[in-house]
Image (cartoon, rainbow, N blue to C red; front, side, top):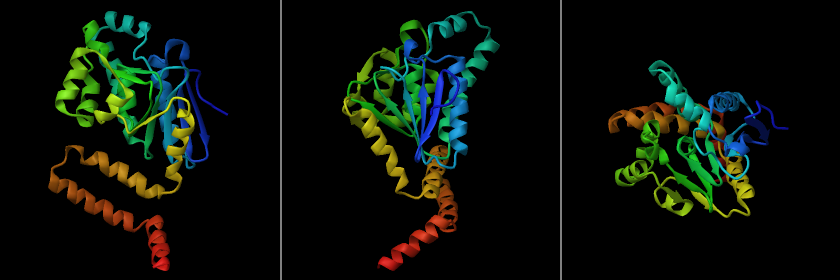
Length: 256
């Protein structure tokens, strides 16, 4: 059974923790309640011993259309301090996605726009239905997709990122995959089943190795090559001491 507040649902099936944005009548637009619910669900997944992977999806026909109208009205009348708190809350969500120990996969159907697109791309991997659309229309209303810029510049080339950020258009799933923003494009009719098959691959690999890989992967973002190698040494040694590694080596040697 799915649990959580009314705007975010959480349930676990086998090794997969499923988090669902549950405002389909608002195209899963982001507001304070939904962002708070997402943080709660991600923290829950991070401590869930059964979860080996998280799948983040939207209820209804769209993943997320970005900030809702009420949130935009609030922004337009808020003080500097209020806007700072609001922006930092979204920043905390993006950081939390990457702090969760297990992989977080966004499963995108329909539209992923503005902050909703940022949320999808903040995940470790992105699976998209063939009919999905991705875009950052913020500049059309005089807004800057500022935090998303940090994500987008790491996912694609400078030229493509600049075009997406400054023209305000959107692209389809195949284009997003060509840009490096999407891992797999899946047929709409079999989308949920294919997402499930993809996610359950994490049952077949070492949970501790995946967790350490994710941690090291993002720690190396701002490091020099030498520092990244040094950090790799530490993780290499730590990995050798895990039960998963020792048992895996033992199984391998028995087969040799």
